[in-house]
Length: 627
Image 1: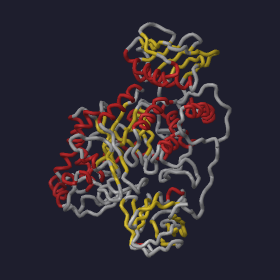
Image 2 (image 1 turned 60 degrees about the vertical axis):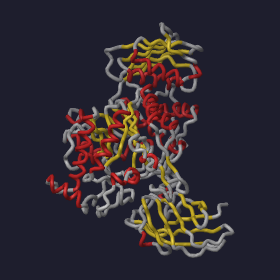
Image 3 (image 1 turned 45 degrees about the horizontal axis):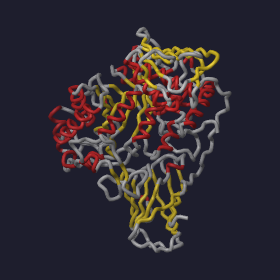
Image 4 (image 1 turned 60 degrees about the horizontal axis):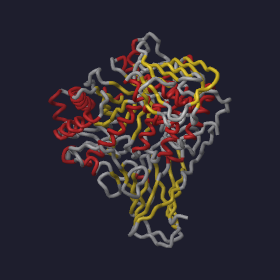
């Protein structure tokens, strides 16, 4: 038993407010005097509603002090409220807690006690297992009789340079076969067929040979992905003929490594999984309020200070691991390693440097450049920060942006850099003399124009570096950036449609279908958020992009493709990451690749059973939808 326990219970709720009772149990032999409770919760609490103690909150990190003496065996109770509709999940409660007196003690946090907890998770019906488990489903497939069985130390012949990375991926992915890249014709051949469209491939497996045709490197990568799924955990491939190509050229996933730091091996595993389901872009969210994860040689403070958080550090503890120093970052050498790893699998790595909001880590690391000490503007971000936005009026902001973007552009070969631009809160810059002077100088009447002013500068800077700017839908706020900026819509598909009608190219990432941090079932014990939706596997699979738009509408040509996203406020381990990703990643892969006329829910489930067996064989976690 822990020395201290925290119980949190919802005692009243309306459509606008929720009231809690929090109890601390002292199971130790200690008498607590002059003690403070620290805890994390993702929701904003009303500090004025506390019935005992003094409450303050920075982001998710809360401090409760001025507490009464707590004898051993006694209880401390207080009540407080949050301005929120009724809560649905236990993870809406307190995530972690600890107590400090003359020493520090971990507090055992029990699950949030909801008034009406739901337990409506419905396991999917068992479908007979398919004979072939390729996901996403190929456009054309013919299953033959017999199998191709690999021999040990077999050579793989590539007749063109474009196929070599894909061959090397196959060799890496199946080390038990002891394959090698050969210099003469063999039973396994990769051949260039220039008449095939970009990203298309043809795979022919007979009893005596495997031949993969493609016109370029991505097509060969996609063909290897299908071959790996045919092999599964074994060494035999069913005889088959596949002719395949994607519906959307862009298929991506965003991974947030700022809220919680994910080790390099997990980043690579995520990229490998993306390649196996024929995604071709990895959007790497490297900076945010809670952590700066990319080494910038000109500004070592960004990782010396901005990559680490804790109770007494410049960057406050947040979410998980709040009782100790927590964080990490990727060196530029490690990033080069990831880029090469992804290239071998046909995946482009797109960095995101999130500005001008979500910049608390950078501001805390570089206050001499980024802090406007005379700014009296009052605002609060969605994540409950009051100090996380860059100033468009500071010279240091532009020194910071120039320096960071130059290093990022040199480090990442992708032709794009994502600059975030989301969730800049209302009220920023309104009581800054410097910002108001910029507005007067340029004739701006709305603070959103200052955001556009800054982003136009960034767009031009990136253009000078040979990069195209990508951003969330708020990037076009203020009407300052050009239509060369590509918009990623996250709040809704409708936002993408509006931007496309303005002339922007867009990527669809609507939270209602593609956000993998949304809870997976209507069950109080599931982890995740639900501001966009509870998103079961079936719901993700049945996303029909642009279903209300006519096929001949010109905006169809403005849509690059589809992206899944995983924000990691609640995800602090490889096991939890994998659980949240799979199998919804597979469902979204089929949405982005397979023609709607070829899709079938029951058929997907029959193939998914084989795919989940392959995940078992590779020790990859997932949420089993059948149990």
